[in-house]
Image 1 (cartoon, one colour):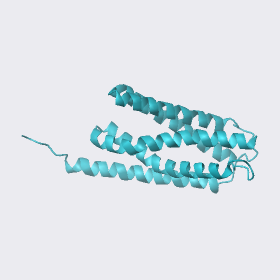
Image 2 (cartoon, one colour):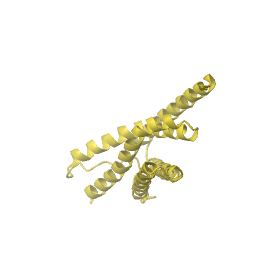
Image 3 (cartoon, rainbow, N blue to C red):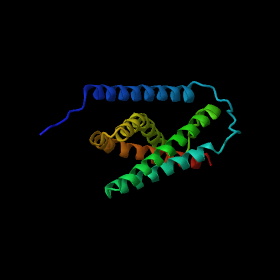
Image 4 (cartoon, rainbow, N blue to C red):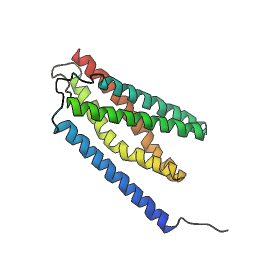
Length: 185
């Protein structure tokens, strides 16, 4: 019986890749924090590209749909279809992120009306969405790294955490958009 263990270089390569993913994720999170809470809005009147929040919610909804389809495919052991669905979910999430950055660069932070109904629920939902989105970003990237590098056992272990978090973030992104629009009238 000849068992081949992974070479130390591949382990250190994995560690380096995961460290790079964590650094990029932290940098992206800090950039978004700066963009939303510190950077002055270029178009505070929200006259340009006012469609972006709706488009972003649409991309979040498409991402959630692709995630659920991918889950169904992997349960049926349809690996190629699962991979295509997950790549689609990643593409929609990427489009969402581009639109989200553009929206906040132009319009800044949009606040829920102070005396609107369900404000407390909205704030709790938004807080959970933001915190879990921050956690989901590196998990999504690590999950993709393991899959694309052929480390399927590691991919499965991380995907068990990544899938529900990513799905929650996608769905709550849509819910917070709808709640904010309804509260604004």
